[in-house]
Amino acid sequence: MLESTQKFNGRAEAYRQARPGYAPALLAWLNVKYALGPGKMIADIGSGTGIFTQDLLSTGATVYAVEPNPQMRAVAEDQFRHMPNFISIPRPAEATSLPEHAFDLITAAQAFHWFDPQRFNNEADRLLKPGGEVALIWNMKDESTPFVQAYAAILRKHCPAFKGFGGGIKERLGEVEAFFASAPETLSFENSLVDDRTKFLTGVASSSYALKPGDPYYPAFLQALNVLFDRFAVDGLLTIANQSLVFAGRPRNPYADRLIEVDDYNPEWPREFEKIRFYLQPILAVGVTAIEHVGSTSVPGLAAKAIIDLDLVIPSMQVFESVTKTLSELGYHHDGNKGVPGRESFSYKALPGLMQHHLYVCPKDSPELNRHLQFREYLRAHPLESAAYGELKRQAAARHPHDIDAYLNEKGILISKIYRKLGLVG
Image (tube, rainbow, N blue to C red):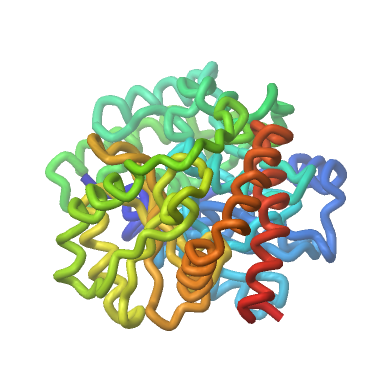
């Protein structure tokens, strides 16, 4: 099965030619609601060929267009490369590698249904400034009209991958609503489409589920589409009832239903690290030179969140692709550097028998790896300061049991002090 990032391979040009834009009233609403303009930072996630990116660029805001499919991304880059407020990012929605807490608005137009909702939720929460919001947007055909009903019947008959318009998002509205911290602001703007035969057929061809020439069932599919066009077109033009929908609000705090707990040091933690290290043995054959236990659980006696931190050391980024492939086979997802250069982050959904852990891949000359190792050795050698750090974490967790950013900021004060003492920061 194709990954979602590959499903538009071979469709980029059709997408550019025939996919409709979004209702001008929608952009006007966003412009007013978020005061878009120069100085504003927008992450347009799953930006494709840049149809909505173009609207956002017109406001003067700086737009980071995040698109993993190289064919789709190339169309946007060719069109907008001359614009100083356009930055193209070749990354997936769940792992953008964009700087944290830097964005006023995140948009996802005709894209959210391709994302992993939980991982995208974590990423959106990481990227947004305090008060920033997410706008999930779709062009949706009016399924109450005779044409759209007849069109959907053809797609259900001929296209096994068709799950409904907009990736079947109307059947997954609970997933959309669960993404937000509270009920999102939901609006619909009229955006009727008028297509001639060529544009209609090209638009169909741009859909991820559409059959392609060469498929044995393609001739019958194409014939059915032409009969449909002839049935509903007037003077060679087909009018399709369509709306631009938007769901806007603050994403759910990933820690809203998770308690930040700092536990007493557990002598089992080093043994749990060894279990994970043993599981990761295959990566030693593809370039990893060391598996380091870092973070608070690596310091004897130090109170910590019961999560193992590991740094996988590589000689250079030349072996990173091989390491990433092997980690993927072991059940890990690459989440980018999460705005921290020199430290590539990986996550997982379920690895039975292994303690919860954070896994990073770092080149041997990475400043971040150096900080992790020096900080670990300093705390191991200075038990009084280690104890003070543990107590600080306990107090921060008690004050901010569901606010991970506030918790990290409080403990970061002491970390920065030690970093300065070690000459790791200016």
